[in-house]
Amino acid sequence: MKTLKRFRSTIVMLIKFSLFISLFAIFFLIFGIENAWLLHASRTAAITMLSFAVFGVASMSIYGGYRIGIYKSRPIVSSMTLSILFTDVFTYLQLNIMNTNSVNNARFRLENLDLLAIVFVLQFIVIVGFTYFGNYIYFVINSPEKCCVITTSKSSLNNVVPKIQKYRKQYKITDAILFTAPDLFDVIDRCDTIFVYDVPTSSRTMIVEYCYAKSKNIYYNFEMCDVVALRGRAAILDDKPLFASQVKELTFEQRVVKRLFDVIFSLLALILLSPLFLICAVLIKAEDGGKVMFKQKRATKGGKLFYVYKFRTMSEENSVNRSVTEDDDRITKVGKFLRKFRIDELPQLINIIKGEMSIVGPRPEMVENVDAYEDQLPEFSYRLRVKAGLTGHAQIAGKYNTSPKDKLVLDLMYIEKYSLWLDVKLIFQTLMVFFNASDSTQAFGETEQFEFFRSEEEKNDEKK
Image 1: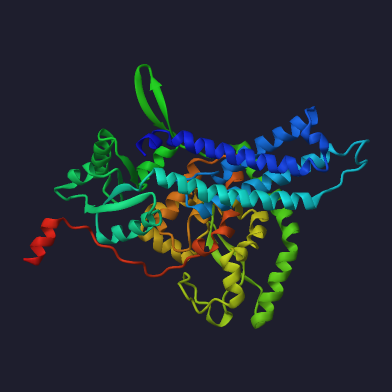
Image 2: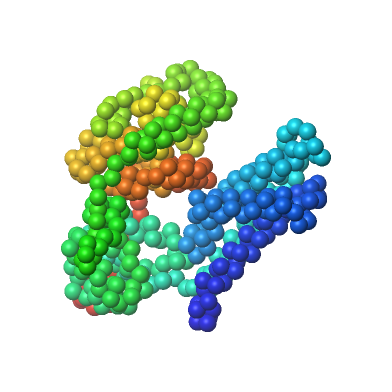
């Protein structure tokens, strides 16, 4: 087993390569039935195959790809399925363009849609097989890492432990300890991976440096100093190495491009989604006869207030202005479905066209929540440095009940790392919300409680 561990990265790479070749072969062997030239050496066949390879790699980089050993099987299947779907559609369209000539089709038309469906079904089966097989092999080779959680209180412990325990095959929590404990470094020494959560920055720095010296894997939560570091770069002045963190704002050209992208994307989306809008309107009206649309005051760039548009998901008689909780009796039957798949947010495309929002950016919070969050976390106002967005890091990775601090960090990660490519990636990644609907829409509720692990000496003292 130790020998296999030494070649872990090679084994993973070979499995990834085998999966990609399998998906590639399915597409070209099936479409080769009606397009024989795909299976012979030619310039057009080479261009089509290169298109599949390039777009396949690009789409997999957007969705995270085949990350066995890091993600659970279901998220990998979801991400790979979306990746290969976009790759198939792109290559299929390119194939039909290549077939528009004097020999095949005088005009462009979509043909062999049945073959596309067969290809996608076969590829999906292969993806599922390779994903579960790949994770099985990975975890046979690699046992869970022994972990300790270092934190400041029981409350902080209960915030982070449930997240770690979702990945039981990767991490096994053997210790949970206060950062002030006298045997802290002894605990670190006997673990492989260290989670440091909510520990004061000065103490955290000491722990991180000790872990680095001992070659331990380290995870720690973001603080504002880490957010500042996101926009930093290494700089050398003469012979003096420095860390440079310069203020970043969108250039005039970036603002123009982002605005054009917002308007064009929103107009196209409204046209394409108009049938869905009509269905939603009919269902909402049919359930209780109330208004279809709902608007609420929110804050955008610079704290400017505006009314955000949403499909109504709560009964009009009992629509108290507060955050949603589990089993909230204000939500209608239609509303539960709309909220589960975030369809209720789509009317905000109108806000985007009006210039009040952007496609990608921090989620516009209720004004009441913003005031409450800023009382506890003054840095929350930093989110207002850019326009509010329909989607973003916090909407994709977070849930309705994600803590204000974590929402802030996710939003600031976007602000500090902005690029048009990042916007494109986040838009495509938004589709993952539909695969993780039950998780992403989790509301505020109670969580399981965990205790700090105690040493045998402490247990014996308690018995005495």
